[in-house]
Image (cartoon, rainbow, N blue to C red):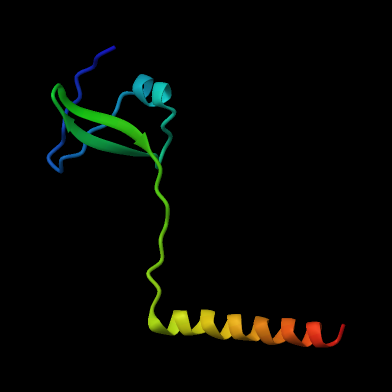
Length: 79
C-alpha cells in the first residue's frame, strides 16, 4: 500500500486513515520516525511520563520512608 502525503508549511503531515487503522494509531497516538536506506521509517511508539525530582521532593520521600520505618519498628516492638 502506498499513498502520497503532503507536508504543510509547519512541517506537519497527516497519515491516511487506512495507515492509522493498520498500525492501530488513534488520536493522540505517537510514532517514532527513523531515517532508513529507503527513506523515513515510521513505527508506533509509546510514551512514558517521567518526573525529575527536586531536592524538596526527595526530602518528602525521605520523610515518608522514615515515618514508615518508625511505624514498622513500633509494630515489631508491640508483638
